[in-house]
Length: 473
Ligand SMILES: NC(=O)C1=CN([C@@H]2O[C@H](COP(=O)(O)OP(=O)(O)OC[C@H]3O[C@@H](n4cnc5c(N)ncnc54)[C@H](O)[C@@H]3O)[C@@H](O)[C@H]2O)[C@@H](O)CC1
Ligand SMILES: [K+]
Image (cartoon, rainbow, N blue to C red; front, side, top):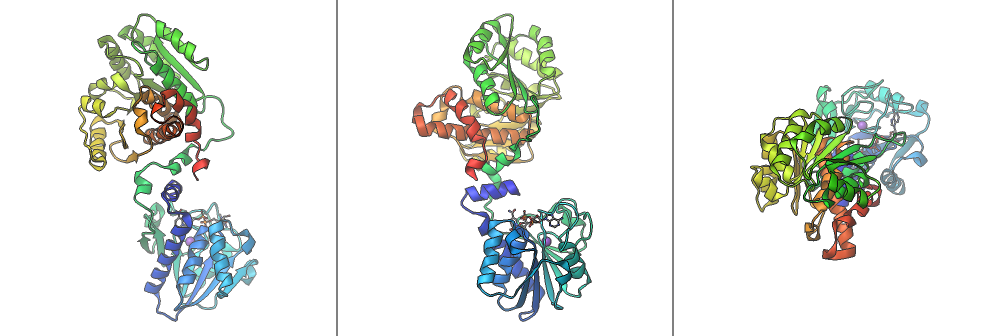
């Protein structure tokens, strides 16, 4: 929900606007439950759950409304809830602030709106909320809870202590899993979150990347890129992208002549060369050994399509049970390989067709096709295009960052490496979606500076900022 929120904001629908819709929805349900002229007590906490009900108070003109704010107004925890509180104060609404639980009293209302706590609750209710919850449960009024009965965990339906026993719950946007187990009526109200906030990747998707300050080297990924042969730049780009996307270590396994070049491109990479001028089945046992201690393997950058190289990829995947990103020529082995590994395949549309998938000019049709093909393959697909489509066969995301300048060589290698780094800290679908989003953003930042003349290394430098959430919030 937090991610969808930030994405909605980036689409021009700020949180305060959603609160206005929620408050309006609460008022609508109040009207369904009581006749005009009835007395309504609104019991508001100091977070956004309370804020929703403060908005509702403004809508309920034909009722006798009293607002009880639990706690001091100075401690209201969000700007938008505070602004709605101040609007009530300025309007001389009937308000009471409850700083001491002993002073909390309901004046025998017909309806109580419980907006003490919503999804922001942690642990058992403190005071004055606990006393207020008991008073609500003892009253003969109908109790309407906003979003979730206060004290109840919206995900599990459980309470760590006393909780409000609601007659009705009005929740927003989508049903909450914990509400199903409660003995009350639940209304789900649309609050105008654009569908696009869920379909398209946005800055909200970056929230999943917040780093734990206590973490150690290796916690953020040890990525092995296997590639090189006819091309030498590609594996170096992918491995550097992994570092720029937050991996702690990036290694490259490639033919000896490529190894020298790769090391020359960057001293930040750990490079291991193997004999011959291309990957071959003989190298597989050593590679499996090398891959065993890594978080993610990225297969394909610069690999070429030598029969022996493709046979080696096939043998490797048949014996590997970790996570692998598969790109470029390595993709063609995926449809007929039996593997325990979790694969994230990153084809462009030509490569997708070569794998047996279908494409379409309309992105919505493509979204369906990609989802079906991902389900058939049993792997995650990130299909690149003007709109990238990411699916695990069940859920899907669409990414629209990026620009035509990114058709230059090497940007796909950057994306594969970034996906590898993110797959060591996120579930595969999220890793692919965030990588596509950030890679496109890095490309957009590069295009701002270099227009159609951008090159893949420009993306490397811009990846860290593209993965930083704060700049977009
Ligand atoms: N997109 C969204 O996320 C939307 C959220 N909305 C509302 O926003 C709510 C979430 O708002 P918040 O994140 O501000 O959280 P809440 O309003 O649920 O709670 C946060 C407040 O409760 C306090 N608190 C936490 N645990 C407590 C405890 N055990 N005892 C006493 N006080 C406690 C915190 O210090 C903070 O002041 C939702 O439940 C919903 O009502 C709606 O406006 C619709 C849109
Ligand atoms: K509530």
